[in-house]
Image (cartoon, rainbow over all chains, first blue to last red; front, side):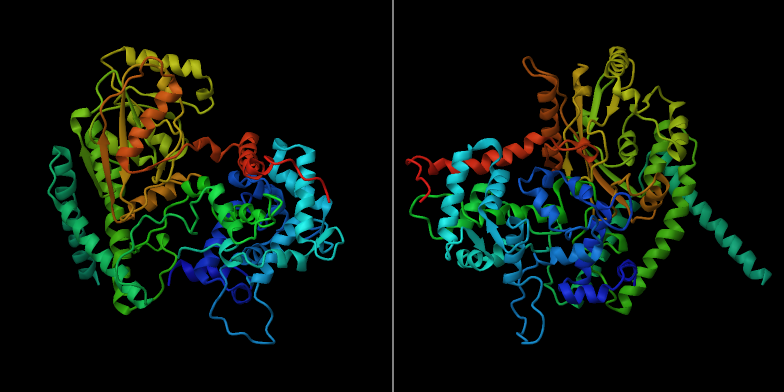
Length: 194
Length: 424
């Protein structure tokens, strides 16, 4: 009855989307409303400029990188499916999910959340956070508030701590190991209220 | 067949005369028959019952949740310091004293994604989603078919709203009586129940009345209890016709939106108006745009520079019965009015606050903020410092710098007290 089903019907392949991401119908509808609100010109897809219109995101030191995470290399638009799939990384971990050996890992698993964060650092996607990439992130987060020397010092210290195989870069495994005590589920999850 | 039509016609006539008798006559004489109050009470009971049925059907807890939840996601309210501090607590502290950790990025990442799903500013400009369902499918996404009884009531609700309330309002809307009577009928047509508080503070002639803004209905609400001169934007279409008819009965000051840019011209016209003590008080909505009635945004300082006495008024709609917020980006005027008339009722509270004047040593901006706080406080609305104009403009670069400053103070704060360790 009513508008719930009609909105869902307008979204192509919504069943598949719900299964892959684990969002409930109500969540999908809200995300769809949000997608439409961001897509001011009603083109059916978003471009980086649309994300840029979110004031608080523009204020975020690593806002550009977060926006970049939505767009696959070479693509300049993101459709609703991809939008939801990226946001699915931030769903709280399903504690009751049975572990089937052959099913693909859910998008919101601890490992995938870490991969998402890793990607924010590793912009050239070579699987390692090089010293330069680390410096870039630090510069973004600290702006003009620190000198170059201070920045280098921080970067050196960080690599020293995490780099176990001494190749002067942080691989994903080293990244994961360094953060193993962090409650990733809590810190990288967003809870929908209803 | 003929007989049936005749009976229907007679029935229609009887119904019409009842409508006139019960609605228009009392409105003319300002007498309330108390029907509205009873109607509201019945409505409340019905809606609460309906919500409980739904929730029982969904196997949630029986108590009605409070309506304070306005967001769709849960946000941690901690400051940057607290959040990052928590992130680091589980991370073994580096003996050399370094204060940056790889997990710091998580904080910014999470905040960023939260803002993509929902942000403070846009949230203010979308309608509140209600915790309890008021049988208007627009306001709750979670409802679904629960029981036959509920469906029947919903169907009845649709029938009542579209066949009874709507014709009444249309009829009333076209009425051509004297100023206050005209507005009173509008209020009845919208099934508006308005409670005025502190009437002794009602705006007097030669003053400026300042109120928070949610919808064009605000004007109806306020004009029900007094005569005002309006300052505002000229609207095209249906609203323009209405505006012009209203202008005939009272002296008003209408501006084009582009004219508003010429602040001096505007200020001069307003000054002249209030200098004349026989002129009606001017009604101004300083937010400059419709907000969704959960908060008050920054007041534009223009109205506060003119001088004169400011009479603040707080308007708060009860969202349980119908959402009065007009999202001008989403709905045009006609569809908005249709929604208003087919809502159950408009219930709102109006508080007249004691008059304020600008004090020595206070500039217009501080005065505006003082008035805004008073209004927000009285109406139970959140006092935001976000500029309502942000809906249309870009955020400043300096806000990003502030974030960077805050973060860097955490990193360098304790860090470089010792002599910095050179690379190993």
